[in-house]
Length: 177
Image 1 (cartoon, rainbow, N blue to C red):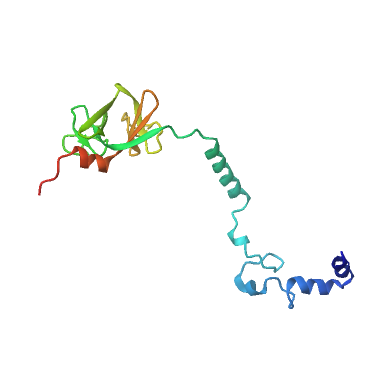
Image 2: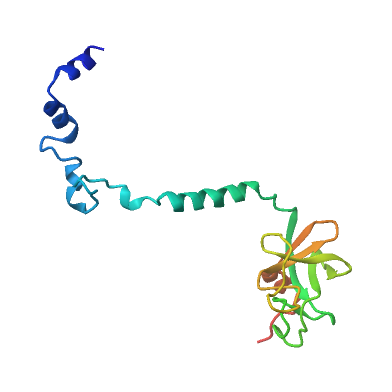
């Protein structure tokens, strides 16, 4: 309390000098940085702020992440894409490997020397993206897969994502040199 009374009794010029520095300038170490307001006062954080519109956009984006549904249960297993003839490829698109006609499902390694094939229409609801969400397919085409395809969604809702690098080592013959 005593200190407050002493400040109130001092002349205004003395108080300004105490809080703004001896030369009367605020933050004199950064005075020449170019970030000053229309009154010539320095504000170092103004150049780094987003502003009200960008701040609202960030807030809306964060809120949408919080209200989204949880990622479905999924497994990541070694596997490759399989076409209707049983040919394997590391990508779902036709021609991505010799004689590959386009993915109809995935073949995964489910145990030592045991593979399981999941095909659309046979226990598989749709292809899945890397985020374990239903793949909308390639835009402008009837293809049920896209560059984001990473596995399948089973009829029960479980997602099986494939690791094509592990799948290539486990399912393809070793390269001959």
